[in-house]
Image 1 (cartoon, rainbow, N blue to C red):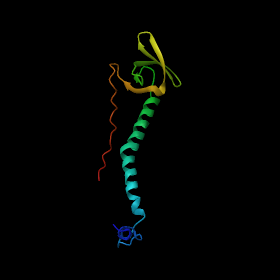
Image 2: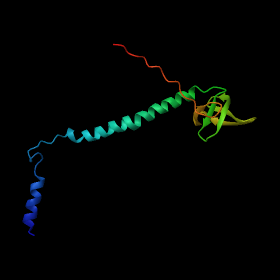
Image 3: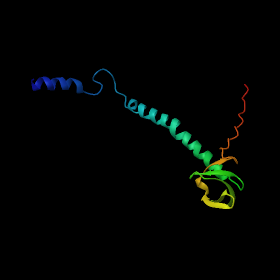
Image 4: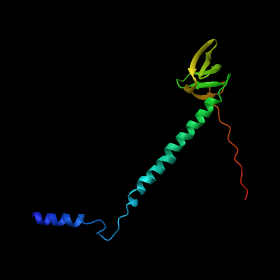
Length: 126
């Protein structure tokens, strides 16, 4: 194999940008990146932000007498609220104190997760 034939073959591939008859668009290189970000935003980031907002609202509406499930898996009923510290009764006369942020969900008396009331959607009539 001759060096001149290899160099000649490689030279025909490189060339100047757009030498093959097609103009290269610098913005076209960013389109796949922008598309990937949009997909990640709508499939991952946005739902996570929505869920975090709902959890924050649930934590702010906790009050005495509510049944809750903690992040550690303890079911109980709120007996006292002192700022961010909740006293939760887990058995007759047995209370534990937990931080408000460690409550993962509200439950009913049987331990089943409370179902959120569906928000009414207004029908738009044309």
